[in-house]
Image 1 (cartoon, rainbow, N blue to C red):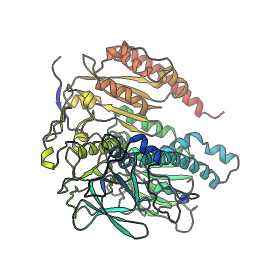
Image 2 (cartoon, one colour):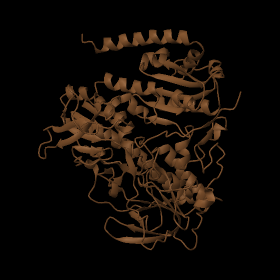
Image 3 (cartoon, one colour):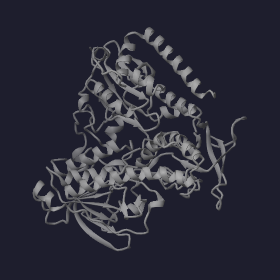
Length: 613
């Protein structure tokens, strides 16, 4: 087979992919205490003997490493650095009240430590599946009681996560410092200024610094955000009531997630998107055309109203009456009147703008430290994740580096940065330039990717340029309802690279488990012709974010359609769809007939469900 060499310059993610590596905090105002004290984490004596003595910090510094930001990225990096084989003296600095935190009112406990930006939405999503709002209302429960039932379930999840994170930090011997960290005006990056909530300040000396302060929502001008009725994708966590109707601006992952969440909770939902074709908007963030169409069809089927080619022009938000509706005047994309027959106004109880995120780097005094950022506020780093700090001792990981704004990639960036700090990593920006990463990517031209290279090693380079250029670096999961996920190439992307590609589809309704429990959805394989090597996997339906990892291994191991057809899968599992799709690849005519029959039966079943008795 001739080698399939291709140059891939592919933006595989957008700012909307933000269920993410962010360390922006999880908040619910009803549980916030008026004050709290710092709670340093100390290792209990039993752990000291279990792991051996803690390595002493360099004599010139208080700590070997200071990690700024206690989201999933910062927590993981701190634990790795404090554990074998590094055994460094590590402090974790965080200011939960600066960005808002979920607090337990009874105990004063910060429940957000180690939690990703999307923790609230994930908890709310799962809660919306378990709690039937219509049933509770039918029982005569008051609206505030219904909402308390929902939010308490979310708090339980956050509390469980926070307790586990504290346990891990204590065991590793990481010291927790509550305060707002920044570089001092001297420009010395071996010194950090930490301001406490009581306005007191102290200075600590550190050998290395990792910035993992996450991201915050982008706030367009002209929207009267108040954290009560008008929210962004972080402040929505402060919602203190269950809205009967909500309008959401955005067409990315976060907007789709919250649209389905609130619809499942019984709210009337209006989605305002600038694109005239909702499917196209989702394709811009990397989704395959059929996966995007499936998600849009589910939105429509669930009763979500979509205002296409529209944007919010003005807001009328009543100040003194939560029951009075917000009035949002709409205009055409880019301004001007909307076509005849289109809505000119939307009324709702609450409004959410979910239009992207930006790095949370503005309060660190980076300029004094000589640390450069781009026009979006992303830290400028090399392949070793070093910033431009003159001493070469400051690193970045997670959302502060920009796209893809994912927790998975951010955590691995944190681990990679620790490895770079404490092993024989390059010590300056120039030392790292042009390094061969071994996975087909060269840092001075990271767009060069050979799909015939060792894909089992993809994902070893986590600097932003390598991630953006390599479609095989990481899987994408969309925690909507239904879920969506993908890895590798779509057919369109493969063809743009000059690859003769085909695709094969299996419907959820074609496997027994899907037919009985979750018939709406599909799995698609993209493969190279005629050899049948699998180049991409795309899924929309229940457990898609779990199923994608098997597909990822098929792509990385260079498995073929024939390999799948010769494999045996356990009965009554979603994984049977991989075999069904492989059969479809070699029997296209029969597969179309089977899908048509399954689709017709499913459509009849859906009509029957929606027909009143």
